[in-house]
Length: 77
Image (tube, rainbow, N blue to C red; front, side, top):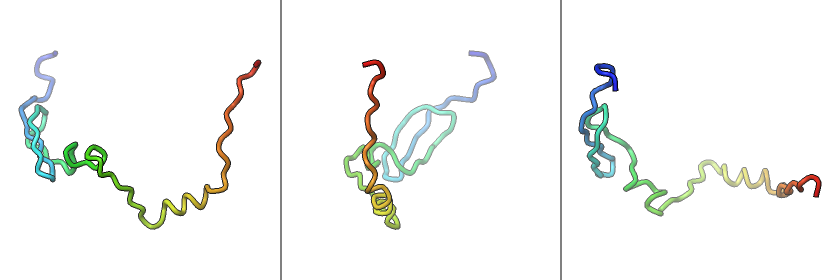
């Protein structure tokens, strides 16, 4: 590494809104985040799909009559 061109790399605390605290190293100190692996719905298994303004129903109605994409056959066989 070249001297005097890199930012200072210090120990920091990452704090989530759910209360989880992680200790790591970063160029910033005391980072606050809104969601982490301890509270993210994908990682906790409690993921719910929120349908705002009927967008899912609108999508399903729009593409209900579409046929599935046909597989392309290999040429020469």
